[in-house]
Length: 51
Image (tube, rainbow, N blue to C red; front, top):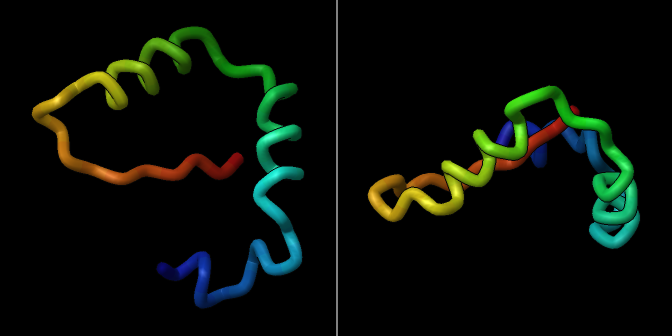
């Protein structure tokens, strides 16, 4: 909520963000970590990644 309130991402649109994310280089193990969060049915969280 603090990100929204601070307007730090004001003016950005979702499609541009998705295209940018497609070209990011991730650290070793990052994809496995994110997939483990997504596939863990016992984990009830929402998460967003800002780099």
